[in-house]
Image (cartoon, rainbow over all chains, first blue to last red):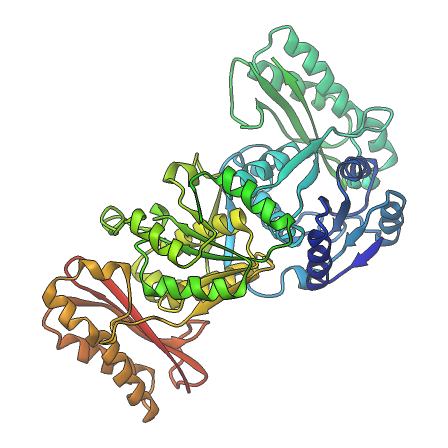
Length: 280
Length: 280
């Protein structure tokens, strides 16, 4: 595995590999890798000749008062994990290398962002779209891999790639969970002991809601069902709960087709998100 | 030469060529090809294994009341000219193929567009940036070729490619002119006989202003010099005249470095632009 920090150096290397006709799989991450990321790397590894992983905590997707400064970083451990997964190129640029000067164009996401994290984190997906577009340009892979835990991100990126006519595949992989059901997240390290004990209730609530949905509950009833259960938790507070069509993320009162049950929850130092997708 | 209308078909063909390790040169146009376009094609032809030309009159870059409907179109003649220039692929998609559904993201140009055509055609460069970004994604060339007559377009696209970390070259070629100095433009066919006689004065005025600049005139004096000369023309009216740093397009009172003298002029059915770039 080689570690590359400079975009120009990445470009040289990628160009070389492309000329050999090698297929490229790309896993963009913000580092602090966990089994969720590793599962993406493993899928990419099995599908491509060359696997590129990027680690970049993207300031553009953090709002004021969010956790950009405290977002977990551990490049040495990440590097070791990537090596173990037989990653070919680990790309870890600095902020000044990714954003060298004033931006001359801005990317604005205009569909599917008035709900969920798009609503509670204004501008977040503009930052996500910008960095993913830049990284895709730098690597120009055959396919890029994302975790389904960030379901809205997956939807936004799939739509962006389509709108901007990028001939590459966006592949989503299932959420990887702890044995008690808590979705793996880099932010879980910021949970207190007590919060960590309660946190699996988020997923359990989604599973119970799924059960409830199969009994014929409509959108409003499901949202209220989830919200009430979450309000019984003794720590933290609900950021949002919603039930929407997926991937369009539209409000459909009578549920049919592919539906996402999604929530965000604030603990003292970590805002966690989770979702499940059901077929109605 | 092959003519391709469908983006998916283009993608297949390009992928094939890429895998052979062939270098790709790309000339995006709105058709109605003239010697200006042909000179771009010739440079691309001499630099690359594969030359792709696109013809697409992009509705997104025309404002209300502008000449989208009447913009000259002659695909048969264009096709013949491309064949003569040994173009490999002529890509001519329909509007519905380029913009198949609601856009999920929007590209907004935020630098260098509060002047010249950016000011007199609001939204124009957002449309240009969007279509060029999409076409660059579709072709993913080693280099793309643009005419220096559209100097602001060249500046905007060069900056976009840099901001979005696209590892490809944007090459600008000198404006090609009629023997009397009129810049070649697809829109020249819309000039009346009388207007056609007057039109070379636009370039002559720029040349006289260049002379005036070498005598030490500052920005305001140069603008006023050009404006006064244009006001003596018996047909048409000035859209704008400006003198700016290039490619930054900033107002610099005391001229130094690379400077653009640019104008836009309305005749009855054609709005023409022209510019010269001088070193101070």
